[in-house]
Length: 252
Image (cartoon, rainbow, N blue to C red; front, side, top):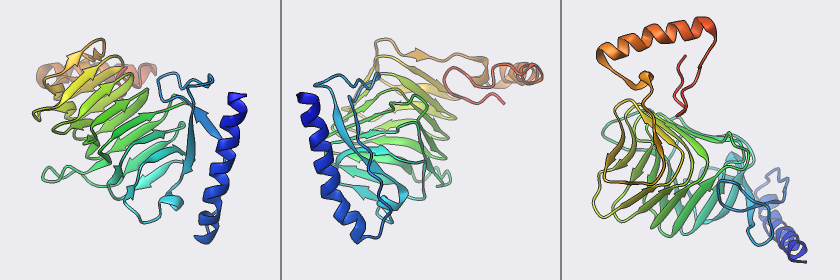
């Protein structure tokens, strides 16, 4: 009975947003997407969240979302920082969000910038990813939860702002610089599982690590060890082995 009610609510939500989609002349193909916001993305009764589809066309030229539950219906490429206000849940649904903004050390542009309330991001398919030439996520929400997604960034994978509590429950973070930047004061970082790798420092600042693996693979080394790594990588490439590090860093 509860499952029937949940499906009925999903249909009602679909009907409520369809007129707006037609008014904006959008191709709208609604698919019921329901599961928990967790590593497992459980479909058990009582755990489900009803997600609405999110595409580049639906986002349009807007650079913000006002909160809610969304799943990616396609890969999305952004040339701006997506700001999210109020409570929000996003399921990557096996897709990627990629930022085309070039790295600029003077401007910490991120792919997603959640502000206020609780923000959670998960992936029900297991291969969803955030790719950034700068920062992956700037966590400015009161609480920011990461479940089973992959973040690849040139600058910080996650930047945890003042006053935010960041919880990593799984997934991978790889950065050419800092994996999780906890340098601001009055924030709380809880690392429960998953893996973090970085070429400079995996975690910068104070964090509570309850089980997240810090990648110590040779691919993150510099200097003489970095030279050794290049030789090892060349051999890997010839043998067709280990194209990607456990933390998500691409070896070759």
